[in-house]
Length: 260
Image (cartoon, rainbow, N blue to C red):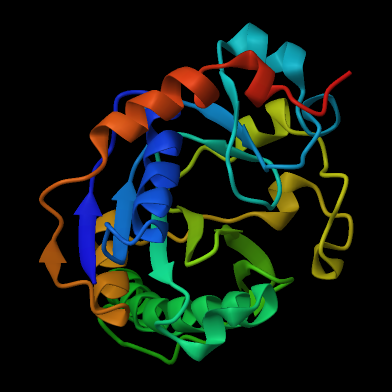
């Protein structure tokens, strides 16, 4: 597997690149890969089947100058921006038996990611304790778990949401990590989602979400090791990315589809 650490200037380009990489792999031309990107501006992304007027406070987004876009994968609506790290896995379905169904793919990817991030939280907590307790380290107990279908949570508070898009030969599994994100902005632009996992228990965004408080560099290294993403990808389907930007991700008909 290759890795690609590439952030485009615009939200539309970043979303288009993921779909272009999926199409490239599905056609048999592209490689399996792990991509990272970190948004430099705030914007809202709705899931493939979400209704914008139900999941987004459109007036608040307009007031704050936040674009609203739609991604090609499922899942719920999220706010992206500085302090958030995104990853995208492009996998061939014949690479692992677990990739044959939606449910088993979710379980397979989420458990591998959970195992990769566990040691980071342990090291991070020990560093913090060393600074606050005269270097007298004590055991730090936390519960890092997969919750719902595709959430990662610490003690029941979500810091990562994920979704997938499947084609004939390949699957795109993508997600984001809240690392050092301004969580107060989420309350302003996103109402409580119409569909909630049971473990949320109707909590507000402020009560439900948390930051991982681990550096992007550490997260990238852990996931690269877990997925054995060794060599850097030297090229990508640039023309298809730009085509998708023009035809889909910068197009209001796509971004606001399912709306009246």
